[in-house]
Amino acid sequence: MKSDSYDIIIIGGGIMGSATAYYLMHADNRLNVLVIERDPTYAKASTTLSMTNARIQFSLKQNVQISQYAFDILDTFEEDMTVDGQNPVISYRREGNLFLFDENGQDAARKAFNLQKSLDCPIEWWPTDRIRERFPLYDTNGYAGATFGPFDGHFDAYAVLMAYKKKARALGAQYLDGEATEIENIKGRVERVKLASGDVFTAGAIVNCAGAWASQIAATAGIDLPVDPVKRQIFTLDTTVKPDGPLPLTVLPSGLYFRTETGGHILLGKSMAEDPVGFDFSWDDKRFTETLWFELAEFVPAFDTLKLIRGWAGLYAVNTLDSNAILGNWPEIQGLYLANGFSGHGLQQAPAVGRYLSELITGKNPVLDLSAFHPDRILENRPLSEGGLV
Image (cartoon, rainbow, N blue to C red; front, side, top):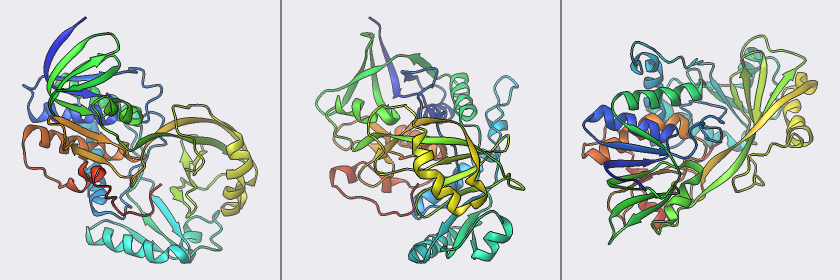
């Protein structure tokens, strides 16, 4: 059994844990930081199983600001993450996000649009004739319009994760393959992390970045965290009719979303109320053929003929209180920090969250005030209000 002491232990080495490790080491490379990751292959990580998206179209101010920072980071990411003269290649494609709305959703869309414009976001308000002009395959009957984010886009999630991890290690962070099984606190202060191997590590600060497994590890410290692992599925389609150019991530009011992928394929998904809770990575082609295909073909009639190539399932770490991040120090346990419950948005929010956590832990004034996501709202049962989350 191994027993060592660190300044900071991060449980979870996915995008959130690795971004946090990077920002901590970037702030002070004298810190002794340990990242514990249960699956170094990342085969079941939400990061690598994501359809990947970065968008500025949120209706909560702080989420918009988080995305603005992500855009800035992604623009220079390949240069900033250089290690030993080697740059990561993240294939960042700014092909846009198109959010359609019907008459019932027009007021909410206008409110979100006005918020985004007040924060200097390059968001466009599109009437249906402009949608049809730009994307003639779309049937806009029944829709009132859309908002379009021309700088929204997608990238290689695995490459971004590996770049953060490599850079954090180059700056001095240590990574350990292992499963954290308990956060031990004594008299309201974190003390140790126990591993399935029997190893024990002590630290002055412990950060829960365990993603879909966050509530499990939080429970060992006596915390009832409202974060469920919920299965989401993605489908890869080869349509007979091909678009003339790339399609943006297109989101319908029902929650159905799709975009083009390299090779002329279409990626499609939809979060549904009946999606199972649990660590289930099985993929069901009937979800598409019996339900989603009809909805897709109604909006894009040319896609009524296609071939389902493949699909996969991953997990959302869903905050059942309000689908927003749980971020900051847990009020009842000194030295315990949470970065959980991102509900499908963690990949794009990792840069701002990693920087924010590093500022909290090292005692610096945060550049971006993200206190709205503080965990005290969990104890107070005080949900944030935001619509249009997918």
